[in-house]
Image (cartoon, rainbow, N blue to C red; front, side):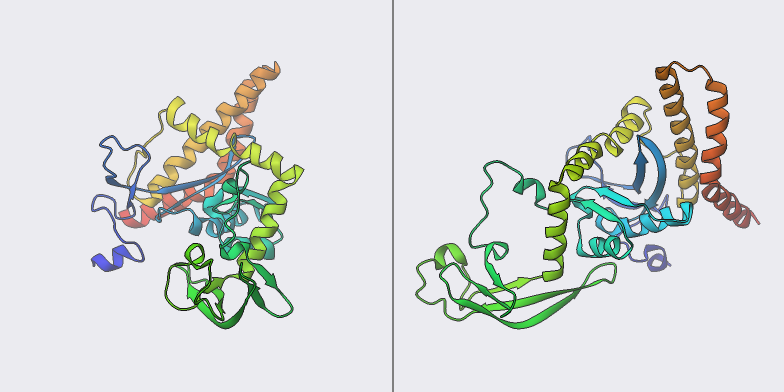
Length: 306
């Protein structure tokens, strides 16, 4: 049944039903053509691949929590610090990391825009309006109160429910600032997610701290450098197998080889010549870490053959 194969996705490939059609960064035709593929998520430390997982959905927002759960299954603990770009900055992800004791250095969507020297916040934007927490109302640029009129709940693709509070101005008719404030008819209504606003404020404080600046600088040379070495130095741009099980096994072996190569390069740079011992040690270490994926693939292949 096509619907059973499709599941919660919007497309799948007939040659690889586990793959989803997505837009790739490498677009030779330059027409936004979609191709079947997987969303590969990796975790790195000192440019070593410490964890990975493949996802069918093209966006990164919904992959963070399952990826951290995969990390916990592999290492029996969650990471103490999580560093990620703005593609992962959602209320659900912030809340998960806070409840599980992960210090989150995760950007939100317009963090970089705020860091520009010439950045000036829009005085009419809901984020710029003054909020009175005791009275639970906002104050518009003209000074009138915007009182609370209700709450709107919305469910995300993962099933998480977000809650936004609605505030309405008392009288916008004849306001001299209306042209720059909003264009709709009637009185202005804004929606504010207070929980997400608090998470963004905490993220801004962490990212602007001395430790946050250090992590932001390292993030550019951690996973991005690994992906660059994979694609351009090792020409590993496509998976060589079909199916989520075989593709997982494919990248597991590649991760083992990548880490061994990285360790040998570090030993060579340090002036040590114990390459054979390092190869044996890291082969055993990373084979142990990735044996669950490899064993699962072999077991499923045996069941299919039977």
